[in-house]
Image (tube, rainbow, N blue to C red; front, side, top):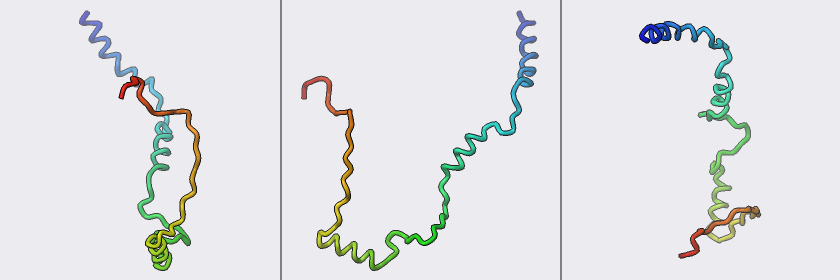
Length: 90
């Protein structure tokens, strides 16, 4: 029995020769990771920095103070889910 264990232990390194040595192994993971990394210093051409225009900011504050803020568009969605308990007791 001991010979089987020793023989198996000596044969295990040979299995490493069966592995594929693909140079692009893991490339999909690296590509997905690179696409999700945020640029710490983005450069946008012609885009105003939010709150950067003093006149627009002052007008927004004045609309807020006088309660003339534009209402956001409502989005109607339908869903087949509902909330509630299954016990029937409150």
